Image 1: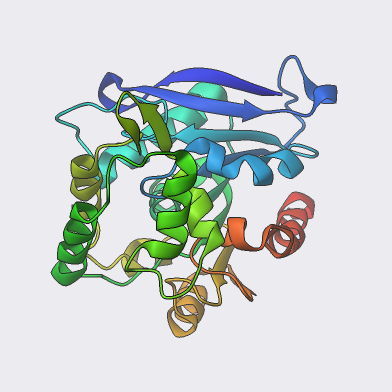
Image 2: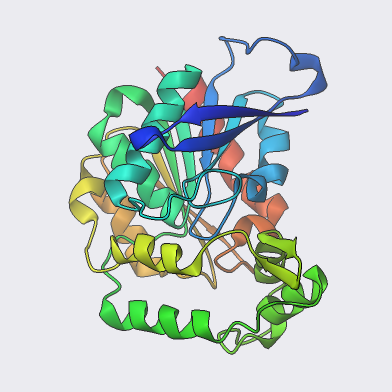
Amino acid sequence: MVQRIDVTGSGGVRLAAWEFREPATEGAPDPERPAVLLLHGLMGRAFHWAGTARWLAERHRVVALDQRGHGQSDRPATGPYTREAFVADAEAVIEQLGLAPVTLIGHSMGALTAWQLAARHPDLVRALVICDMRASALGEASQQEWEEWFHRWPLPFPTQDAARRWFGEDDPRVERPDPGRGAFFAEVMHQAPDGWRPLFSRRQMLTARETWVHDAHWEELAQVRCPTLVVRGLDGELGRAEAQEMVRVLPAGQYAEIPDAGHYLHYDQPTAWRAALEPFLDGVKSGP
């Protein structure tokens, strides 16, 4: 069962949160179940976590958020799409749904939001999972590359499957076929009158990215006090040396690496992804 819950985010933005429950847990949330909040990456949506949420819901209260500008949440034309806004939105979800102390699981930009929230509001966060997100600055060249990449998208796509093929096989940024990447982008396309287009505004995505690519985020990472798992795909965007340095900087950091996985590792290797997360979550649950 999946239930939509509307939450009021920072500045009054309407956010769509989705609670995943096993049939046996339908009804009022069980306060004895530890809560998990899932935060997708840039251009993502809550339902990217569906596979993960289903097995998590066996033992947890699981909520996934469509972040502002994404999925079925509001896309305010003037934003803001700042780090402060994304963090405040996640905080609002935790407080309005009574999730604290929560385990935050974030992918890419969602992982940055998660660790910034954990650093600023440690009382709200029980544990943290950082999935393939760098702490180092990416710089202006990276932002320019993304802007040029957006312009190359052959929109509209004639079918959703055509979008899956382009992003997974034909995109110039794909060095070899990447089914996980194709699946990720197929799920953020919707059928418009002239074909299939993204659920988000590419301009707004660039605006959101602009607020964090120029800065390093090591200082806030070091302020995270809760147990934290840093997970990377062997072929992902987070390099091994940087991931291991992130673990060293974290006061309670742990490391996991998933072979044969890229940036979208929860798509590429869902079984290995689960195998990496479950021991960590079990340790958090049984800890003090």
